[in-house]
Amino acid sequence: MVEVFVDDKCVGRATAGNFRQDLLDAEIGDGHYGFHIEPRVSRLNSVPIPATIKFDSRYSQHIQLTPHVDPSLESFAKVIETRVDAIMALTRERWERELKLIMRGDNPVRGCDDDAS
Image 1 (cartoon, rainbow, N blue to C red):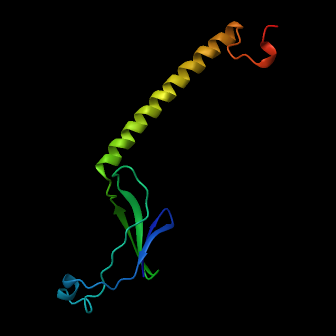
Image 2: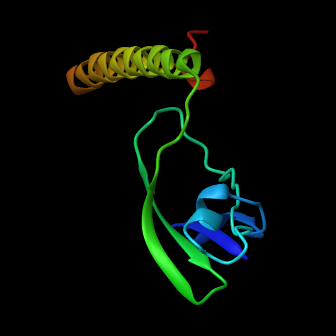
């Protein structure tokens, strides 16, 4: 059994049993030690992820997973980040404006009790 861990959480596992000619050529058994794992890792960018690969729970090696990211998703993530930044800036400006009014003694937020009768 081959397992991949990210932050001590198993994100993929497979049985090493696929034939690989290069392993047979290197006289590593009968060559049936290949495996394929699609780690379940959510990323919208292609920054490498530190991971650990374990073989039969006895041997481990630190690796870097390099996610394949659809370029359209990466562009989408940048657009969303830009829009969220803009919303946060507008929200901060509004809070600062309201705080100035409160400090002057004006109440920018009116409740039901503040209505003029």
